[in-house]
Length: 258
Image 1 (tube, rainbow, N blue to C red):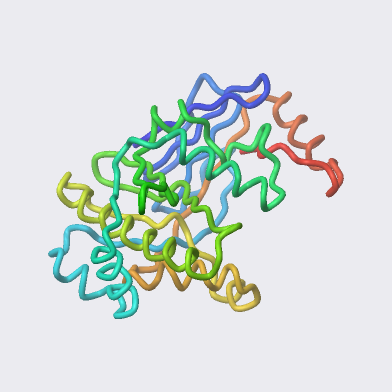
Image 2 (cartoon, rainbow, N blue to C red):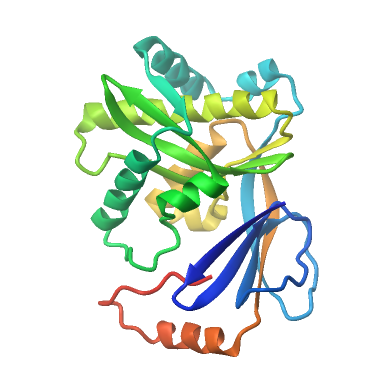
C-alpha cells in the first residue's frame, strides 16, 4: 500500500494506492482509494467502476517479451540501437518542466492541478525514468510502487512542438522506458505492472486519443482487468468547496479535486 498525502488549498487529502478494499482513514478532509481490486459496498464511500491494463511480472521475462506485439518489440529494439540513455531518479526538475509545459500547452489549469505533482512530491513518492538522447532529456515516465505493484502515474514528453521525426523518436523512447521499468520491477520482486487504466472499448471507439492510448497500452500484451476507485469525504467544508468548484464556468481554470 502507498499513501500519497497532498494539500489542496486548506484541505489535507490522501490518495491510497494498491489496496484490495477501501477503509476509513483519519487525518484528512477526503480520501480516495485508487484502482482497488475488489468491488464492495463500503459505507460512506462512492465507487467508480474502471478498467486497467496489467502485466503479471511473475511470468518469465521471455514470455513477457513474446506477449508484446511485434511492432512494439521492434520499436524497443530500435531505441536500444539508437543509443538512448535511460536514467533512474535523476532528472526530476527537467521532467517537471516538460510535464508543466505539456499541461500548459493543452490548456489545463496548473495552480491547483494535482495531476502535475511538484518536484518534492515526485521525489518523496515516485520512481522516475527519463530518456536522454543527444544530450537532451526528451521526457519520461513517473511511477508509483510498493513491494508488489508498480503503476504508471505520469508520462510527459516534449511532443507539442516536435516535428514528425522527433515525435517518433519520443515514441520509441517511451516504449524503451516501459520495457526498462518492467525489467527493473521484476528484479525487485514486484509482481504486477499497471499501465494506469484504459478506456472502455465503446468510449475509445468514439475518441481517437483514447483509442490511441488504449492501443499503446494493449500493445505490451497487457491483460484488461476491472478495478474500482472509492472516495469518501470527511469534511463538510471540503464537500462545499467541491460543489462551488463545479459551478465554475468552462472559461475558467478549475481546481483538480479528489
